[in-house]
Structures are given as structure tokens and as C-alpha cells.
Amino acid sequence: MGGLIHAYYDCVSPYSFFAFTHLQEVRAVLASHGVSIEYVPTSKKGNQPPWLVPAKAKLGQLELERAIKYWKVEPFKIPKIFPILTILPQRALTYIKHTYPTAQFENTAHLYWQWFLYKHQDISKPDILRELLASPEAGFSREQAEEILTIAMTDKKWKEELTATTQAALDKGAFGAPFFWVVKTDGHGRTVAEEPFFGSDR
Image (cartoon, rainbow, N blue to C red; front, side, top):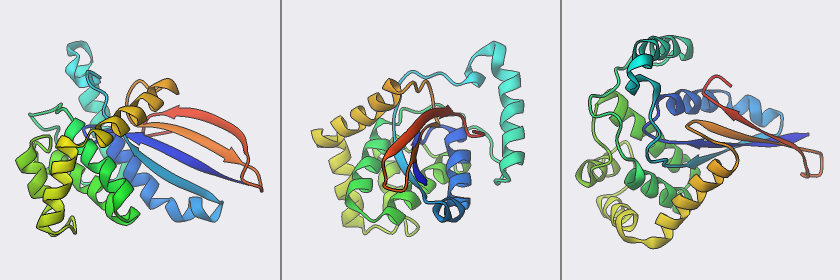
């Protein structure tokens, strides 16, 4: 028995950050049971988070504070620039996923949240995204960072790829991020069951 967790997420979502952090922490345990993780960048325009709805804002902030404590991550405040349009950074990440080693892809995803949630940098802006990609923490050369940014801005292939993965999540029932499609397989790798899950606490 084994399985695969398709983790659909958006870099604007703090709850995607909680889920990503937790999955990275339990990855070895999951692997010991034959379960692997695939992180899938998505970008859903117009999905309004609870704390931007006046009637939900107070509870939404309280829930965020609870989640920060529960997941034991360094405290942060939602940036004043929130929400941002994540199409450009998620296109870049989609290209990185298919071009660079998995560890570098996942490290870049983590950096997105570090810059956005903790540094309050608008990573949807080309100049800031370029700076992030060229930072020592990202592990890309300046030439590679420039290439990634240019491809994310101009290459139709990665625009269509991000659109397709976002639509795939929507077709499976996603209405926000994070969203998970969990597949259970038998000893021969055949799918025996699959179910959707929503939210970082699932």
C-alpha cells in the first residue's frame, strides 16, 4: 500500500504555507509508508479570503493567530499589500518545478512565503521577484533568475501550464487553497481510492 498527495497551493495563502511547512516536516514519515507528495502551484484570481469580508474579519484574524500557534511557525502579520495577484510568481514556480531539481523548486516556494508573509514584499512585481530569485537563498545565478523571470512573463507554455493545473484543481472541487487530492494505491501502484481535502488542518 502507498499513495500520493497532490498538494495544490497558492503563494498568497498563509494556510498554504502552514500546510507546506507541515508536509515538509512529516515527509520522511509519509515516505516510510510509501506516500509521496507533489506540490502543484495554482493561481485562482478573485478568491476572497475570510478576513477581507467585514463580517468575518475579526474571526479570521483570530483563526490566523490560532493557526500560527498550532503549526508552531514564526509569528507574522498579514501584509498590507494582501492579497496580491500571484500569476507571475506561480508561473515562474511552475517553470522551476519542471526545469530544476525538486529541492530547489520547494526551496523557492518556501522563499515566496518568507518574502511575502515576513518581509511584506510584493513578489507579484517583476523587480521584486527578480531580486528574490537572484538572492543567495534561492540558489540561482543572476542569469538563471533573469531567464526564469523572462520565461514566466513571455512564454505561453508556462501560462497554459499554470492555467491547466489551476483548472485541474477546480475540476476536482477546489474553491481555495490549500487543496489536496489524495490517492491511495495498492502494492502494484494501481489506484484503489482517491479523495479531496481542503484546508491546512486536514
